[in-house]
Amino acid sequence: MQLFLKLFGPYLQWVYHCFDRIVINGHLLGLMRENQVVYFFRDVCGHPKITKELVRQRSQDYQTWVEHFALNHKVPLHWAEKDVRKEEVVAFRQQRRLREGKFGVYYNYIMKSREQGWTFRILQPRFASADPNYQLVRKTRSLYTHYYFYIVDAVAGPMVLRVGSFLPFSVTAYLNGHNFIERALSGQGIKFVKDDNRFLSVADPAKLQAAADQLDGKTLQQRIDYWTLIVAPKFLAKERAACGGLHRLYVMEQIEYCRNFIFKRSWPIRSIFQRSCELGLYLLTADRIVALFGKQNTRRVRGKLQNVLERVDHGMHVLRIWCRNSFLKQYEKAATFLRMELVSNNVRDFGLKKSLAYWDAMRQRFQEITDRFAGVQAQNLNVHGQLDVLARLARPLVQGKTKVSGI
Image (cartoon, rainbow, N blue to C red; front, side, top):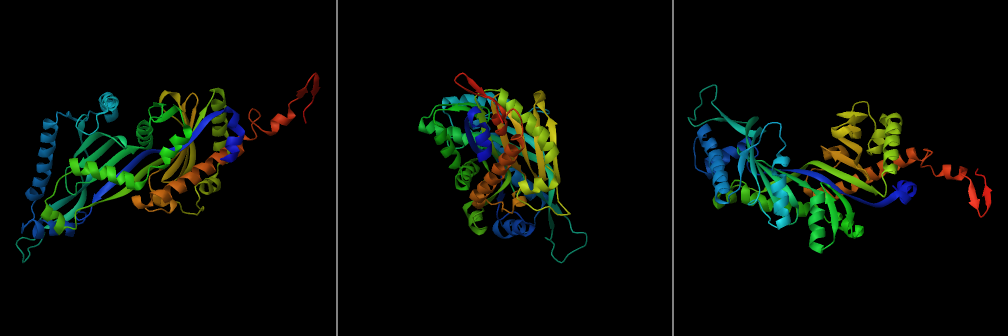
């Protein structure tokens, strides 16, 4: 990283690193296994026989509650359209509420979508049993309705909470680190210019970086718990006490961590990106890729181990370097904005645990990997004639009226 800043320091405006996209799953402890479901309905709720109708009634009660909630608070409730991004539908309304300073789910959208998720099936036993109430409970994946609650939080900014309408009522939270930084800077009265998920300018870059470093697992859990208590299915106090509180365990599903370089002009970023793609595809072999991710190369690797140059929307190229279930990518976010981003679909690839209690350890590991990636890119670009430090020695030096030839 130091070599990268040394090479391109004269062309850089400022640099910051932070979390980008964050996806967190919430599992309801006490209703995750078949035996826990049997205990809940038989011993807690007092139903001797578990039937499909009994389990379905819980789902119907929650779906009815969501419809009444949307009606009472005048929140639009719609089915998600095919081939239309949900974020595009709610973007205008969400940004308007954010400018007005209205926080909560009460001023935004609730969208419905039929998606795959874990649930429980009630099956009749194949053979007769001495217990007439005996039923088989099996955990399986099925297609059912999920609700997307689009929320503007006072701390985390715009976020999405997806809640499954079938047992075990799984919860998935979609957040963005840039939105958290935006709310922190607004609270401190610091002026900035933000476009989508990038900051173009800020009055005090040091305070922006300090706000990015304040995001931790405890804060995320507090905000998700707060909105889950409001929009997720409710349980009686007796049911909570009998099942150990029915708390949720939050685990990291997908994490993106990025380093952002904002240049003064557009021409250096074009040269840097083109040359880094050329050398990256040629020099980043399997051994170097696993070393970049801090792993060891073995004969058997689960997942991908490759680098590829992709062309996505609007002709933008993206350099991706895969290692197992995670990858590094580098791309031009704007004319003067270069981003290096680490995307992890399974933090266990880095020897980390998924619980939010290990958030700081994950941050440190991701910083080391992105720092190492920037150092490798700087080493490759150090031989480029346009940006080479040694190439400057070959240029003639003018002192007064005397012109001295280079080395």
